[in-house]
Length: 130
Image (cartoon, rainbow, N blue to C red; front, side):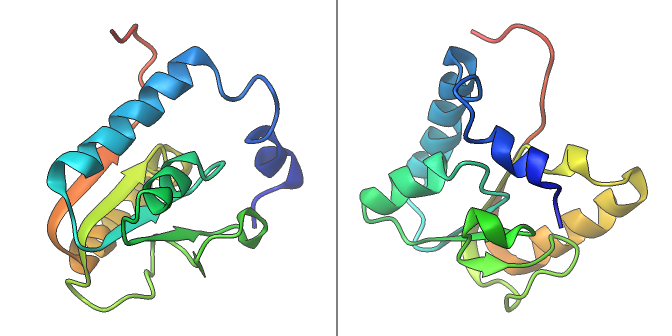
């Protein structure tokens, strides 16, 4: 389980910076472009992306290892509790960098297993983005 400090930081005033909102826009836009029937978001953070999509009537399920974040499903990216090829899109934004290096390939295999079409991945980048 994630430490309380880590969970709390999603809801601090400094968390949703201008740069993070730009990132949210890109994350949401990548899903909107695909117009999926069923989407899984792995690692929900503060819930902004999934809440936005749900408010627009997109069928999006959320998964996080931390039940305190109130995901639709509590679980690990290393053992996704979904059937093979269940989702048209799996979005995994800013998650993989939190895993030990030796677990990343297994996580990617699980993501691939539960999608039937698209995987959207995002990792942090320290360079400027426009």
